[in-house]
Length: 470
DNA sequence: CTATGGCACGGATT
DNA sequence: AATCCGTGCCATAG
Image (cartoon, rainbow, N blue to C red; front, side, top):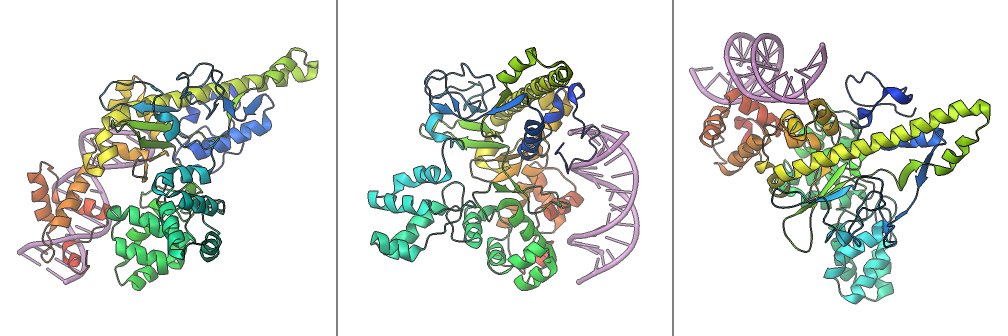
């Protein structure tokens, strides 16, 4: 089976997913990428499976993303899958998909292509004639999401100043996915950096790295990069890590891999987020729209024809076919199970961690997987699997590992960052003092731990800190 | 002597 | 059972 390198540590049962053994959960631990591979493999070798492309609401005929609620007739009727999009209300009661409002806000990767998705976002900010130009420009997007048009030529064609065209491309670049319509990867990266500037360890150095140091970065020659930037190797690594973790030179091609565990390998892997959380637009009720990424362009199901055929199967094949069929429906069941679990998980997570999602790292609530587990009434290992390897796109377009929702020290680390940012620049605080200040804010941690957090955030020790401008 | 990084231990989490 | 995390102790750098 085409399930090769997984970066789990000790997965015992792997390759032979032969029917019955992998009862359910085996899919839960997979992220969308891995899942995709798995499904495609199954699809290729199991004739009982069928991928139905395009999906229409049985009620109103509107074409839908698989598993989505139909926003028009406001129901999931006829859908044999759990909805993959739901709305987390601002209070703590859930309404599993009140249809309203999520119709037009959700980019539908299946029925809408990138150009129109982008166009729709920026349309409100454009004059009619500009809109036309934007539309033209967007048709030249290549598959990486970069613009191949010649701006000069475009300007001449439309008989407007180049600056007008440029300002339009600028607008495009800031639409989601951030960086689309850049003229080259560098520009895309810079745009993304701009948006994430306050998250970056040192946005100026990041910018310079992007402009001048990409060669070093891709070769992972951090020493030389450090030299180029005139900074320490540590900072260089930090910057490199930030860039590879958060920025993506090819905006259309999903997002840049993201396992920021220092010891990460698998560097340049692209990865769509497994979950996407947006703020519900329009009625700004502060509601969050959560979408579970679905890797396929269609609905997976057991091929009804195959089922028919089985009845009059030629004796020698009958046995095999039967197995295929069972396997197929098992896979589908597991898939549904996986989605169900993830959705339930996210429903709670979205509510509990709403502050974090909306307002940033500082507001994360310490949360353990096990506490969530018994709230959901599932085994904790289920949660673990559901969380592991997944990534979430937050409303600010940042992609973080889902495990960060359970980061016990994140809030302290951000508090730490705040203190360091605000406090005197000429007279950096030592770890001991930092520890005391943190204690005042209610975070009682040891001095030694302060040092650890500092490292995690890529902040230099006190005596080296006054050197850099930041 | 003070400020930090390294190693490693014990308890909590997964 | 395997890992992760906060800490204490000690060595080293300034």
